[in-house]
Amino acid sequence: MGVNPGPLRLLGQVSALLANYCWVELDQVGPTGLSRLLCTRRTRLGKSGQTIAVGDRVWVEGIDWPAGRAAVSALEPRQSLLERPAVANVTLVVVVVALAEPELDLLQLTRFLLTAEATGRPVQLVFSKADLVAPGEVVSWCQRAAGWGYDALAVSTRNGEGMEPLLQRLAKPGIAVLCGPSGVGKTSVLNALCPELGLRVAAVSGRLQRGRHTTRHVELFALAPGALLADTPGFNRPRLPVDLDRLGPLFPEIRQKLGLGCCRFSNCLHQGDPGCAVGSEWERYPLYAQCLSDLLLDSERTDRVRDSPDGPGLRRRGQGLEPRLAPGLRQLSRRRLRQQLLDGEDASEAGSEKATDFSRPDQAD
Ligand SMILES: Nc1nc2c(ncn2[C@@H]2O[C@H](COP(=O)(O)OP(=O)(O)O)[C@@H](O)[C@H]2O)c(=O)[nH]1
Ligand SMILES: [Mg+2]
Ligand SMILES: [Zn+2]
Image 1 (cartoon, rainbow, N blue to C red):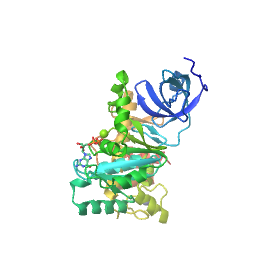
Image 2: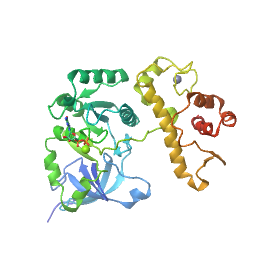
Image 3: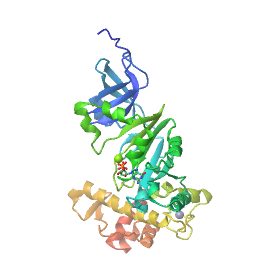
Image 4: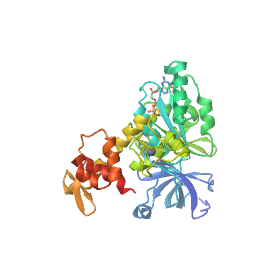
């Protein structure tokens, strides 16, 4: 058809993943006026262990302009990664929770905030369904969040409350991602913010359309030039993202307190012990303690899967094996954990089998 083949390689950004394909939004418009290509992945990306995520900057080649097809050949280094779901180069993580329906769960909210903080990017907290609670309650939630260190916005897609301020915060160059439990109104917010969304949905055709509705699907939508927004599927119990000793700094309250003074022990887990600069007199302290305890349990489960040939009651430690944490032990004993940190290996001999597993934080030192 006489179409100019154009350059061999072009740079773009992955805007959606669909099974073995991805959509790449090119930085520049191609010779046929096309700026969006349906691309396959070159196998060497997979062999080098690199997996493409939405938001990745990629090089495409083998471009078939009339068909609007190409192949991703290389991946640019990432600036950040939200792991679950995978979104690369995120510039703002928006955590959305409803003030009602479903009832706000503080531990779940905290887990979402931690996942967001783990990206190292700014976090915006949004309280949705503000229309379902009294105005006074909306204000008091925002004040509470301010005490945690978040400048929260309350919104309603029903009556439009807070939507304009939200748009202002999101319509900046970069990739903002909506995260939060299912049913809180993330997709409704996206629809309210992106008027042309209906057109985009209709434009996806045939066989590929299936991918749109799978629960793993993430797609970037343009809010303003250069300002992209991703909706994510709801998953209600996000995995805690970190090692035990890196949990603390994911709480703005702890960051703020550590900015004012140091704890006596550099490996302090901030459980309000003498010499701890953080203390336990802050609202989310019980949630922090719970996350610390859950993190121990999570790492225990991971070990069990990985080391299963060794038998269910043991895990590897160096050359040897040692007993695992009893799965029924939900609550972390502060005294035992601290003793373990101070005493190192010795505590496992003095203590019970359960105490042994709390030696894990030492390994990070
Ligand atoms: N009362 C109220 N309901 C809302 C609001 N936004 C969304 N919903 C409802 O909440 C339900 C879940 O919305 P959806 O956007 O699918 O939530 P998602 O799972 O977080 O994407 C739907 O029935 C929406 O109509 C709101 O601002 N107020
Ligand atoms: Mg949704
Ligand atoms: Zn401390």
